[in-house]
Length: 153
Image (tube, rainbow, N blue to C red; front, side, top):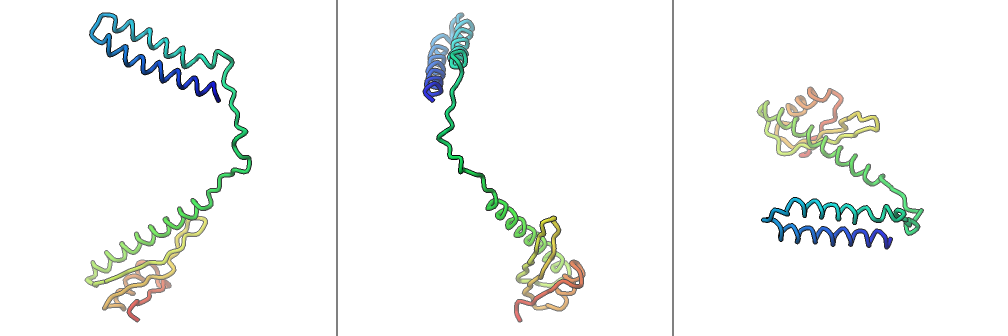
């Protein structure tokens, strides 16, 4: 670990020196020669640990009990996918109802996404004054077996 630390310090020091020297010689004819020499010094500083026998990484500090558990991320992904799908279907249904001249205050679609990726619409809850016509339009779009619930009742 000390080798890595000293290597990083050397590279940072040489980089800082390069910046300072380049700003000092920026208007002279030696600019290109100094830039080449300083880049060679930087390469030598960065490569020095490899020529001294390489790095000795000690990874014993890492716990062997550490495991990556992505189940929570998968659950979050599936829930967000379900929520976004529900929102998209509700938006399309709302547009269809508006096109038919039906004013709908609220529409919620309850969906289920199976492991194979298929989407099933469990129920649609709407709040409208013209429930029968709205339900008929929703069932014609989603299928006659779709459960449409009036939130007012």
